[in-house]
Image (cartoon, rainbow, N blue to C red):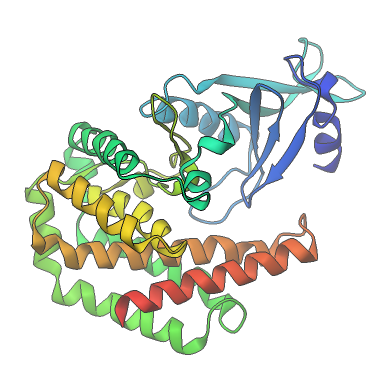
Length: 333
């Protein structure tokens, strides 16, 4: 993997002319950023909720990423490119050599237009929130709805996600989350399923369970003229097949996490007005905010075990995870 990284950081290995190449790594991807395009390579990892261990699986999920993300960012996702090893180096140019990886090719979006960057500069406006609410409400109201997808709205089906979260985070108790917080969140979640079962069933009858985005936070919303939303979940259908309120809850939670509670409330008001959400959905909004904050805490916790990052990066991941878990706890107090 280190040889692949070294080779693809060489501009001559990329298919388009570029003066520079930089790398950003997540727990599941390596993202090579060139002047005009971005090339995203999936890591050969298996976390249970995703499995990229074989080349065939990585090829399939690269194509899924392009297909699904074109729903909200049709001009950003260009296609899937093979990465070959020609005996000397890894390259995306030419047809010589064995295909050893695949990359999703995307147009590079202006980072200064990302919702998080705009918010952090203090430039996010009510007009922006209305645009976002409009795009998301139309997407959710028209997203695919089938009996199979609706089955994921059943409490016993969604409980698979939260059970998995608690199981996977248990090893990080005392590292990224305190024992008391872990126990309190687990108990509250289990009690919610018991006391609010009818609410889950009602959401299914209302047609609120759809093929959503699944990873809707501020770094995936680009405030360009067309307002593109990128990087949906492609690797596990059950993370996309959800209540639409679970989708918007992620973005609201992300605003809360960064100190934008007023913006969070305004966005919910604009969105709920367009989708005709009623007050009886508010308990579910809290439930899914807790869920989303816990997931972000989990994802950052995974980096504790990533041997490919520095100690400084690991320390930042631990601190970030603690903040997300703390936010989840604050929602239930």
